[in-house]
Amino acid sequence: MYRSHVLVCGGTGCSSSNSQLIIDAMEKEIAEAGLTDEVKVVKTGCFGLCALGPIMIIYPEGSFYSEVKPSDVHEIVQEHLLKGRIVKRLLYQETVQEDNNVKSLNQTNFYAKQHRVALRNCGVINPENIEEYIAVDGYQALGKVLTEMTPQQVIDVILASGLRGRGGAGFPTGKKWSFAAANQADQKYVCCNADEGDPGAFMDRSVLEGDPHVVLEAMAIAGYAIGASQGYIYVRAEYPIAVHRLQIAINQAREYGLLGKDIFGTGFNFDIDLRLGAGAFVCGEETALMTSIEGHRGEPRPRPPFPAVKGLFAKPTILNNVETYANIPQIILKGADWFASMGTEKSKGTKVFALGGKINNTGLVEVPMGTTLREIIEEIGGGIPGGKKFKAAQTGGPSGGCIPAEHLDVPIDYDNLIAIGSMMGSGGLIVMDEDTCMVDIAKFFLEFTVDESCGKCTPCRVGTKRLYEMLDKITRGQATMEDLDKLEELCYYIKNNSLCGLGQTAPNPILSTLRYFKDEYIAHIVDKTCPAGVCKHLMKFTIDPNKCKGCTLCARNCPVNAISGTVKQPHVIDSSKCIKCGACMEKCRFGAISKK
Figure 1: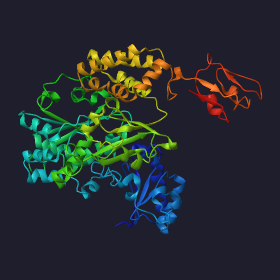
Figure 2: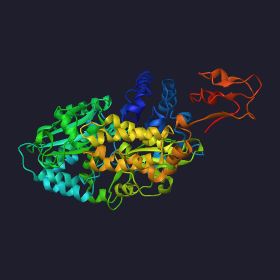
Figure 3: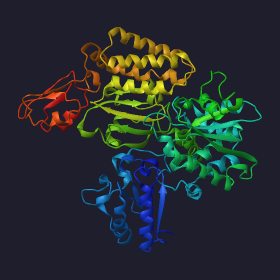
Figure 4: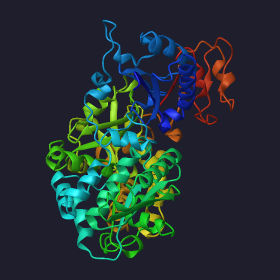
């Protein structure tokens, strides 16, 4: 037994901040202090507060150290682990109370309103050790369904729980399973979509890195429910840590007899293999993903037939994403009523969001469905940096839409988001402040969609390109009001005629910004100005002669010599030469230069 456990985040975020150096230094210092038999160092998955890495938590005290450097490790070992004195200067500041005592991490604003189901083991266990997963009830749900339940009873529990797919569309998971179970075939497949492609989304990656066995267990349960013996996890090769830990987990599960032949001696056979994707966004669409697993170019197929009838290798197949699977074992163990007690009437359970953009607490959050956007942004996220005003939040990535401040108090669930012109998507949540140009945001997502379109259908291949060109024309101040009408008309045409979800949802960022921020589009077209001062072609830098001291610093830093003036006299910017790089404004010490 160890008296202390030192948990260090080994997720992608903290790994990029060199958390492995912290682990190495900690193990060395512990050995030198003679504490090897008393203190155990554990490399875990993501704790959630990604911007504070590298992160270390020491139990049993629960001390949360953030932004730890290798040079801090000696002090932590000597003071905390040897002398029992917490190093308060390294603590996450919100855990330090006014009376100088340290409060629990669960009492901080970031964690207080969270309810972790899908992320329950992330940051808690070593994802590369199957015994740690088993110690927190791992594979108990699989044992229960194989020894106590029929396949139909498993499906009934998932149906009763109200679990809906967390990959974007929100289709009821139990229904999908029941459709596949009803189709007889000599072979069926269970697939996992781990090809997380939305800009700013990293929920599934964190589950795979921090709790890979939960996905394997859930897929085996799904295999039993529908009568499948083979599973495939389609994971993007750009997630090397996730791929590495998944393969370790698969090997360990096979070694323990939890994958393979005759699992738990019940005669049930089920195995899982990895298939690496090249990072194509379109392969998030289920038929394109299956086509890619088959070894072909990842392009969607017309539906029907749906995958439950004719999916992978033309056999009945179910496909769920990582977060959906991460809920399954807990639903089996705790019951459908437990899961259904969380969330809203039509959206049960919790949802994981990757919180990013103009927000103080960047990271992963898991909250009950029905939590308002205001609670996530202002309370959990810590608000907007620099005292700036909230302008909008983008949910659903390139397939979603922008939610303005007027809808901050709308409970977040599948139906409410669609009603206000957005969608849940996989869970990316990008916050924007007053300095964000909404036309530019729409253009950013359309540029992404144009690049990621597989090109199979004309509405998406050509239509998204035309949409991007129109947006570019608007940001350059070259568009007319007639172009704005054409833009909206083309959006609806693409939505109604594209083959798959990529094209059908691609216009959403435009339609939502037109709905709530049309005045910005009009300002670009009619007034030839960008209200947020973002679009370069509409930007103009000017020098206030009353503030300019004639220090010549701006002129000396202008790369194109667009600024003229003599020492101690107000300077002037030649707009015809100015390339709008902002170097002059950055260097000015007197606030004399502004852009509009």
